[in-house]
Image: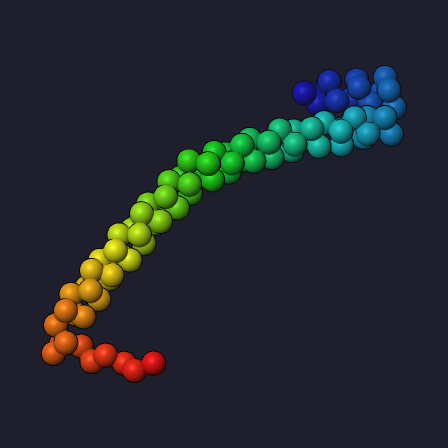
Length: 85
């Protein structure tokens, strides 16, 4: 590996080798970031969307139960005091 680097520097010069090096590490960084971005998008698409759906269903069920409870309490005035508005 060191031999290859030394040969590259002697063939193209130090400034060109440095430019090539920084382009290479930037390219590798972009590859890693692309993988991370895709994993994050998959997480949002699958897991978070599923959790949002479950949460919405749970909230709807809770609202329906609360409405049933309010209706039952209105039928038995001794259990709830009606507020005057």
